Image (cartoon, rainbow, N blue to C red; front, side, top):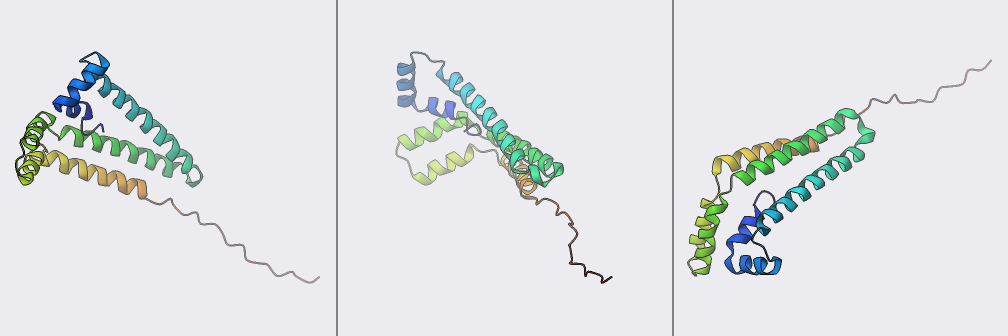
Length: 153
């Protein structure tokens, strides 16, 4: 939700925006919803970091640190993806859909809202985060306890 800037997309839908403004009694609901989503994203990221650390605590500190770095990289990737979307152009997509134009033309306008280079960068960074998260823990070389023959005395 943070990447697609949901509050501004909702504000671009005229009827929905007017209804939310009427229900809340304020036009500041866009910034309020944006702040609430940012707080929710930060809290869920911190909670996710804690759960990842707890889940990996028996595999060693390097495994925990690698997971924390992977989560941070993933959040950076989502942020880059969000900045690669041009929400201001989304209004033209909605107008095209409301104007009953060809769905292919509406899809073309929607894809025009995406900055290809930024999205590619976000994808590469996200893949790095995924690889770091999936990296298995180092296996401990536990010595095998072979049975020892008892010596007769």
